[in-house]
Length: 252
Image (cartoon, rainbow, N blue to C red):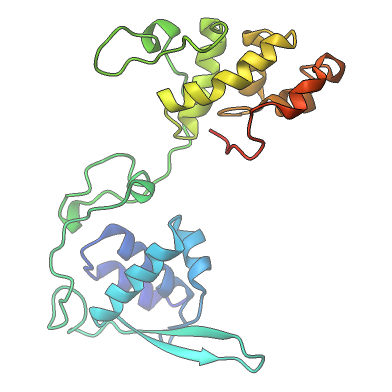
């Protein structure tokens, strides 16, 4: 790591907070000559963004004259990039290579969440630093709040055999909130057949959602309940193996 390059990277305006983060990570990996060779995947993991986003930000930094990529082929046929950082006076937004302009920060949902939900249209100097929330704060919603008669966003639980108690439901919603999985009508509908099947096997709705909350599941499938020991295998009807439920149905 070169402290001199880290300081220069910190002072450089790039017009985007996530792009600045990528630049700082490259400077963190660089030697005193400004050379480094981290993989795109490594940068993505360290900066908590997608590999594609890292590649896009690197291209923009290269267009601004802040770095140069050198393609290097290894002895065994594998290849890698060597990044050469350049912080001369003509680089960045303040010089002749200001190809980025003063673009607004319009981020996709997967990355805008890293900014804590704050507006991404702020000027670069006022943009909030990326952060990830790991809050375990309780959810104050109850079934009365979710099962609403509002015409704007009602959730219909009529396909469920029963509703869980308020406390169990709040605990489960806390898990979904922590994992940024908002409860939608699609999620409610896709849980319904598995829930009906569980109740038919002698399990209560409260037991199902209590298990989900204790295991940090945002959803479930009937087989999960069996494997977890909530439902005895002998209680499963023989013809359920040929039921209409798709075993490849993705987790909600």
